[in-house]
Amino acid sequence: QVQLVESGGGLVQAGGSLRLSCAVSGRTFSRYFMGWFRQAPGKDRELVAQINWSYGSTYYADSVKGRFTISRDNAKNAVYLQMNSLKPEDTAVYYCAAKQLLGSYDHWGQGTQVTVSS
Image (cartoon, rainbow, N blue to C red; front, side, top):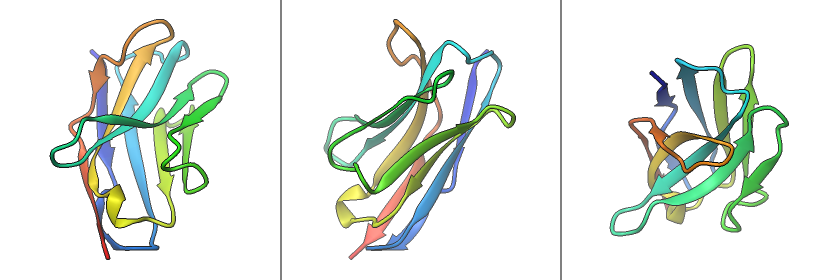
């Protein structure tokens, strides 16, 4: 069974940085995309960043381009989201997720809270 466990959330002032980690276990992810989503109160869950596990190609939502960086460590089976220049509107629960190349995101972590104070 696939397991995704996030860590690294917390409270930070605007302009600060946080690094989220996602520990991945239970399957070989060479044919998977890994994504970071977020959901703020009263809003839909949105895809923030995505990485192809094999090739390392990435996607970013416009709202985080130039500020967030997604990466993966094959040896550690982990995915990271480095978040810089944080803004109050980045406040949300952040989720790590996985999907096969042609599928939908169907494996989710429990989420980690990120709060950015102004």
